[in-house]
Length: 423
Image 1 (tube, rainbow, N blue to C red):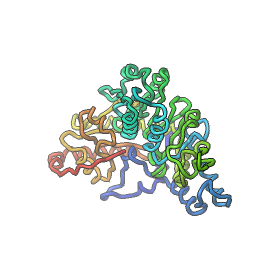
Image 2: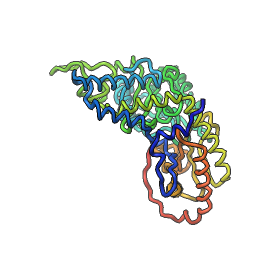
Image 3: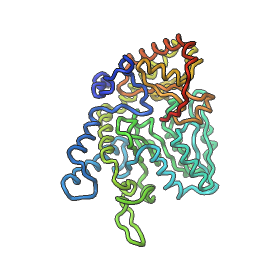
Image 4: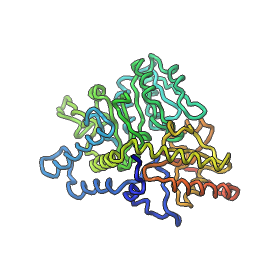
């Protein structure tokens, strides 16, 4: 069943905006998505009707808040087909989730002479924590390269992973070239030597069906704001047998069952990892976003984006050699992300020009500097799609690029302000 995109668009008030005299076209979804009215309403209900702390009181409002907060864990667990709701840990974002794994499990299990395997396409969030851990304990970081069309070198993965490998950290989908990695294949190689697999699902979980039981990974991290949830929300899912052996990343309120002057008894899962007053409204909003996506059906979300990617890649061919697109051309192995450059123009210039046409894209190195250096470039323009984007918007995007190409000589002399862009 296809998504009724025009009905969906009615749930997103931001799409009614006019930018520079034109209807907004929002193609910056890989950085963060727009929020539907249903998510905002769920957050507002908490703040307006039961704005109490959780796990702190027996009065009615606290009980209501606690029940909704715990139910939200259940909803997110169902969304990724976790075995149980208490395997779902609320964090601030994917970055914190991965840091949590690196500096709890990693510090206890990775030592001098061990190896950590990463890929060159990793977002900094799934690269820098592991490099820092390696420096702290004397481990070695090894990298798996990509092919000329942006696919992971699985042959090299099999060569790099060895008995010394303790962890393989891999992105499920690149936020630059859009490559969807075969994570199950990575898991097979890693588990053969007893290594743990940490999957960065920030770009995958919001856009395609993700089943942690089927994937076989040991940890999965993803962010709420990239799937229509509030900013400042993220999820870490982990295997129960691993999580139960870990001490908290942060300790304090709500992480304990008991404290004496001489010791501490840590709380059950997931509370031992959710220190202090959590982002209660955020978790409730994230659950509302997950429910929205489940109503649409994640297979349908994936199908919609595949159609947009296929259509956009085809239409970009009309610009001939003036636009260079990075990553695989097959929509079956590519998510809803298209990074490109217009020959002769700085990526920031193209981004500013597209904004004049009311089109929001991302420019820069997208928190993936090593991947850009591997591609031999210092930045890209990135258009990324979601459930509310249409072919008509793609047509406007292509027409705007054609106009930009025609004005290339004038635009090329525009001053460029270097900025660091993430996401």
